[in-house]
Image (cartoon, rainbow, N blue to C red):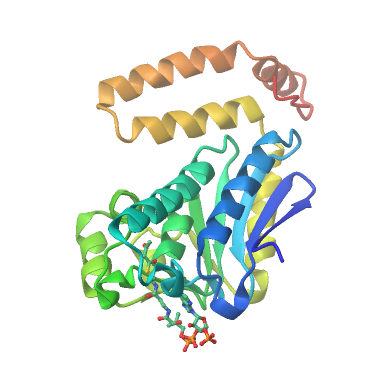
Length: 257
Ligand code: CAA
């Protein structure tokens, strides 16, 4: 069975990590599946947003420990690189991406959630980088993405103490944007995707890219990126349509051009 399911809910692609017996642990096959499904989403013209979630009681409980045990340094490097490619495949999507975390998001699981633009959680979610309990460190981008999301002190506490934090704490420190009841989580994430789907796709893609690239750039470079993107977006059919619709007091019809 495919360890990553892709389902289209109207304009929203829902990717589900689907190895519930192993709490969706990320083995090579699952990471390759994630990359392949992201490629598929990127090639599907009508997708306007993506939700990444997990089947069962976990989002993903980390990299697959059984598969990692016994890796040589070269194999560990290749495995880490594959995890990085999966995170990069999520991050490179031009549409907004939301992680819907309904249970454990540990180690590599937390790292895949962090590769999404933001995270929604259920009250049952648990986040952590427990690699130190195994004598390991995060290997799928966690050291760099977590610090950017929650700041250096929380990133260190989470990664060096190795104990999970609950949804409320994750919300308080800015790891999670919103917390929902377990039954409502996926529908709420999809509903946000539907709201996004009504906006201009050209603007969304540029806003996402400029925020993404700007956060690691000098602020003057970030401002320059914004000015250039603003000019490009302003020349799109979508922005003419959006402003015309406002002036004519009607809803815009965006075509992604
Ligand atoms: N890898 C492989 N299998 C895993 C797994 C993982 N990361 N996490 C859970 N599983 C498997 C268990 O082995 C178990 O399988 P069996 O039924 O065949 O024994 C099944 O999933 C259910 O797990 P538990 O019985 O342990 O469930 P629990 O409710 O008692 O505990 C848990 C849940 C606290 C999440 C516990 O499973 C756990 O601690 N998992 C490991 C978490 C972890 O250390 N993650 C980091 C991995 S390293 C990493 O991710 C490195 C990196 O950045 C690249």
